Each structure stands twice: as C-alpha cells, then as structure tokens.
Length: 506
Image 1 (tube, one colour):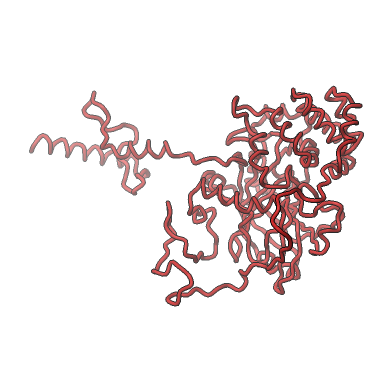
Image 2 (image 1 turned 30 degrees about the horizontal axis):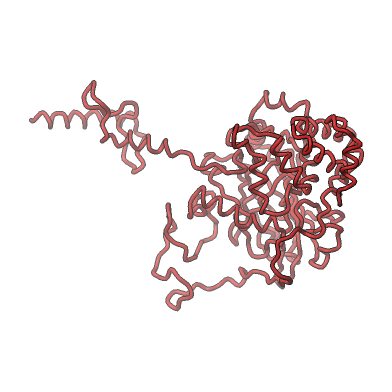
C-alpha cells in the first residue's frame, strides 16, 4: 500500500468518525459535514487548504448573510394571524377577502421608520403597520402606519423627507436641525408633527396602537360602481403611550420593549386583535370638504366609520430573516375590487415600494415563501436570479394561439375618467394648519402639556433661529394657545411668532 493510499484511507476514516458526531450537519449541496471544528491543513503546522470546501462555503455564506436593509422601516417585528370579515360589504367591493364566512391568513409587520436594524424601539417615530393578506385572488397589502395622516402630500418630496430625518451625511447622527430645516419649508407637516409629539407618538407596545392605510383607495363592486374608502385598524387592547418624562427609563429598561411585549402576549395565548373599520365616500362627495379629500395630510372629518372585520395575531415566526426581513409589502399589491385613488403620495408609493423590494431581494422576491401567494401564479415573467418558478412550455409571450390562458374577467381594472392637462403644481386646497389646531383642541390638559414638553425639547435643539421661529409660527397658526405655550417653552418671542403666523395663509 502506498503512502498516498494510506493517507487517503486515514482521511476517510477520520471523516467517517466526524460525520457520526455531526450527523445533523450538511453542506448546502446536502453532503454530510465531516469536522465542523477544525479546518483542513497541510500537515500539523501547515497552512489551511483551499480544497476545504466546507470551510470555504461556510465563510462565503457568512460574508453574504446580510442583504440591504430597508431604507425606511428597517427595524421591524412580524407575526402571523388571520383576518375574518364581520360584515357583508358586497355592495361596495367584489374583493373576496370580505366574503362572509371566509378566513384569510395574514402576516403583519410592525416597525419604526427612521431607525436602523437593532435601533431602540422607543423612538419618536411613526410606527409601520403593514398587513399582507394571502387571499383567494392573490396577495393584498395594506401598507400603513399608526396615524391616519402623513408628513407630506407628494411623493416627489419623500426622498428629501427621509434624508432630512435620517442620520447626518457627515456625522452619521440624527440631527433635529436638519429635520426641522425640512419641516420649516414643508408647512403641510404641521398636522402630523402635532400628532407625532403626543404620548400616542410613543406607543408602549405594538399591541397598544391603531393602524391606518393613510391614503384613500377605491372599492369597486360587481357592477363597476366605485366608492372611495380609508382603512382604520382599531386596537381591541386600547391605545397606550409613553409620556415624555418616562421615555429614557423605558429605553433603559428594555431596548426592545415593543417586540418583547407583542411576542410574550402571543406565546401565552393572549392574542392581540384589531377591528378593521372603513370610511366611505361617493366620488361626487370628494369636493365637499374645505380641503382636498385625497390629501394624505388630512383626515376625513365627519365621515362615520363602519366595522367590517377583525385581525387576530396568533403565531410568532420561527425564523426572523425568512419572514420579517424578507417579507415585501407594496401598496400596489391589490386584488380585484380594490384600486388605488389619485392621492399623489400613494401614486408614488405604488412604484417605489415594489421597486425597493425588487432591489433588496431580487426580481423573483414574490416567489419567496413569505411573499408567495396561495393561488397559482401564471404569467410570462421568466429567468432572473434565484428563479424557482418552475414555468413550463415555449409560449413565454402573449397573445398566442398555441397555449392561451383564459383572462379572468374579475381582474379588469376600473375605468377612471381623466380631465385636464399635464401640470406640476400644488393642490388648490392645502389648508396646512387647520386640522393640527382641531387635533390640539381635542386633547386633554395632560396631553397638551406632554405635547408641548416633547415638541419643545426637540425644537430647543434647533440652532437656526429662522427655522425655529418658522416652526413655532406654524403651530401658532394652528392654534393660538398651542403656539403661545410652545413659544414660551422654546424661549422665542411670542409677539414675533404671532406676527409671522398672521402672514401665513390657511
């Protein structure tokens, strides 16, 4: 027996022993791992060998574990559940998800907006509230937040809004000077800022907050009739926030308070629930308000809500990355019976959200298990990285007489009449300050005091006097008491603030 043969037999024997010790481990190609503790070397003192495919694959896979985190909503928490309709709304929509007696699986992802993965959940930040319905007509996403409104009304400003509120491009640290520089030149944010700085702007749990679709959408029934709707998830657990003076203690107690609270409740069988409500408008009623009804910085005042279903979360995911991190939401993921409205912010999100997921996860991201519809997918899309769609046949085009696929009549989009010429200008009825004042006046004395404390704390970090005075004048324009108290808390001259507010148009 040659020396080479003896060494080969010895190597085989050692590998067999190691395999017996690690019978549960395999390489990605399914072969058993021999020794998972020691690399192959050229003798006792020699260098590590390139032929050690297990070592190489292990390091390669480790180097590639991270995918680009979401630009916004990177810090997230997910859970599985079910949605059950509680009312027959076939007069409004043909979407089968609302058929009485059905039960639709869902995956819900909660999040903060500006924080990176691993950042503290107790941040002064909107909370993402995104719901993926795995319906019998395909997947439908409601991608919203815990407030019924947003900071801006046109998607063309979204990258600027995010840049100003993300960490500084120089220091890598969030800076209120940058944020309020943007907001001082975006008066439409006054309403959202007022709501954000209340106690509800710091939920003590994902269970203790409502969710909203924010934008108007269209319901279309079987007869083609259209109604405009807004979605509201109302927490059955109630709404509870953290007061400004208690935030530091909350962060010190538990950096991951919202996630730990949600998962603890689910694991002990205390399943959180939200009732789904809608507001409904006839198309001819959109212009009845003294503001633009499709402006996402506004709520539909005086429009009653109607309960139509209940969402229950009942299972914690087994794998964070394969669910919460890889799940992809986009408001363009709609089903027959639900259409987008002409809301300018929504129109931009229809593209941007799907595009960012395609960038993060690849062209075939919707075939990942967490994103895969329960219904069969039949189209002529093909190839691309990580394609496992198993499409068959030569007809990867349409129309074709060789292998025609019948068109689903229920999938036809509603027709919308368009009038006018192309333009680039603001909406006519901006009313940037009115609802901020209405909301402020609805608050209790304690909530008003907490709002002034929280908002003034950040405004007092703004060093640019012009921006600081501009911001306070916006809040004064919304409500004189609000602006006066904020001026006192920020050590700004009330007379100057009042004079600036008088020049603002609302």
